[in-house]
Length: 384
Image (cartoon, rainbow, N blue to C red; front, top):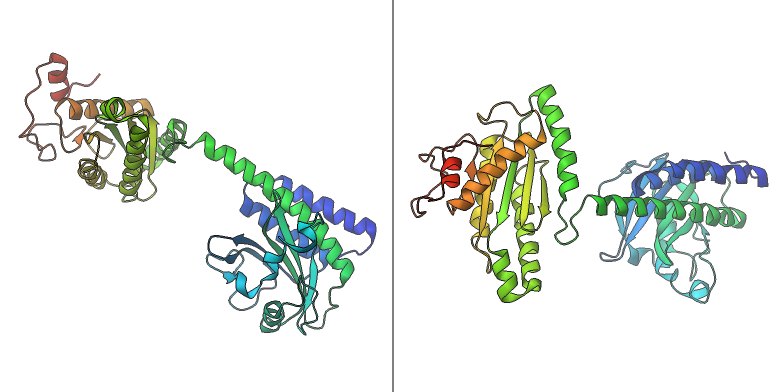
């Protein structure tokens, strides 16, 4: 139960701020906020919800404390129509819109609350349905917009919340909103550090991290690791003839295809290495499954409105390519296969360790024999 003295409440605010300081994600911040607010206010239950404007739903991120039947600590799909709780929309109007501050309010199971615009029948009904007597609802405001809410409840027979509790909840909500904003900024920085801004795929840094981790598992547990390296054909021609805006759209469209085909390999990473070079890192999938996904990618890329398809090379520890002790080794093998695919204008992926001309994956009947000695050396499989 909370210490209602000024010192006790100050200590609760400090404790919540300290817990939020260690949170790395908005979900962790929500978890710390629900637990901290429940304990600080002497509630039996607390929840943090986010307002998803595009769907008009309040999505519950965390439930903490004594859960009612059907409630889960971190539910996957618990959400409620904002139409049933219209007061959240009122955060954008009234005194707040005129320069005031968003303020928490109290609701009771008897419907004697003081939410914006009067008592909320949805809140009162929810309290009765879950066997709770009263609650405090406080808006969470980030960057001047209603982001969601924190909700703290007490059971039937416990002292109901009063106006001073709502005042305290407003302070706790402000502290929690600050913590969530901090984790969102951190998440955005991390996303930008590992994401290609044009396509939304992973970038080279993300690939390096994933490959290093994957090869550690390969060495320790024998988990197969595969790398698909792709070179988008004809991008320069598209840029020169149709403009860079069309070239960017081609890169974005191919990035979507790469993500789609990468999804055939659970846990894979689709990434843009830079320019017209892309890749898929697959961990745990068989070499045959990776080749199948790469083949699907080649077929789809060949049907794009602009460009000239894709040259695709595959290297997998599941094939006879010798020991792979470093990411650099796997890249060299996949790159060599990709160079070979480009030289032969192969409509399908070239696979390291499967490079005999009899391999049906090549389908090279329409491709002329290479004349450059370097290309001939790659065809025979002599990689650097």
